[in-house]
Amino acid sequence: MKDFSVGQRLRSAVCGGEIIVVRPPGTPVELWCGGYPMTAPDARVDAATVGAGPGIVLGKRYVDDSTGLEVLCTRAGIGPLVVDGRELTIKAPKALPASD
Image 1 (spheres, rainbow, N blue to C red):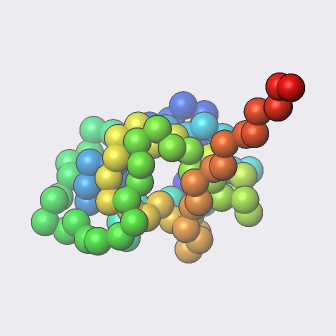
Image 2: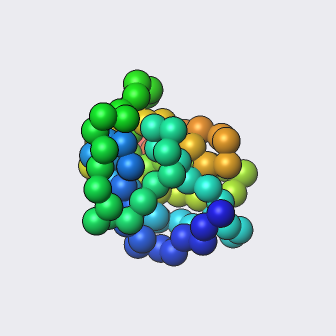
């Protein structure tokens, strides 16, 4: 279990995927990508362990409603992003007010 802070950068241990924490959870959680824990941005990537899964998309925000965690994908990669066994979902864009 890890505590996260706003602006913290993390990368996948199995692909080039990278994220920034936008809203940290209220409690320590486990954050995984591609079946392995997320690591520090300068950690070595072992491409031999890359698996298949739904990819993480550049520029998209991912959220976990249970913990309040929100992250922004800054580099696309193989996913999925998982927190405490639950897959994060893409945050829906806010609807703009209609102008008549």
